[in-house]
Length: 155
Image (cartoon, rainbow, N blue to C red; front, side, top):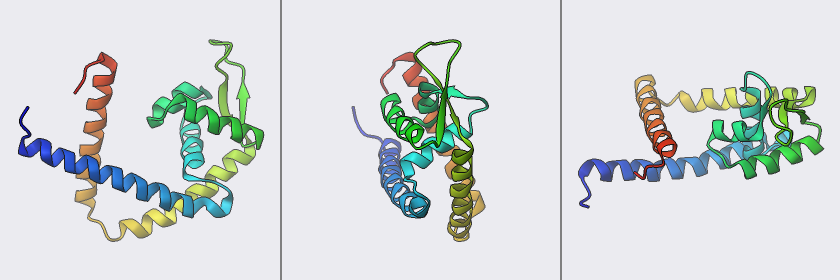
């Protein structure tokens, strides 16, 4: 199949997203290191905090586009440290519900205070309209990919 100018541009965008993801992970690691987090742990804490109610690991993973196994490893470590707690799931005996403890909620709030300062400084050099367009494009791409996953189609 011949590569079109639009598919070449999309490929460039995907490669840039990969590069950006690496930079975001590195920046996040630096940002939350002093409070004892990594980007991976922070991401899972955020996914848990943003759930409307305690959720199983698989739902937390799906929300963030992560694998269940990687989230399970982080949840297990966070539980040992008293940052999250596991509750019985009335709908599934083996898939416990994950919730933040008081110390986990405080840790997440601390990370978000740091993130707010960082994002404010980073956003100062960006144009609102460009950011809104970029957000819309990335959301649309994600939704298209999620639709393909649900139907089992290949792009």
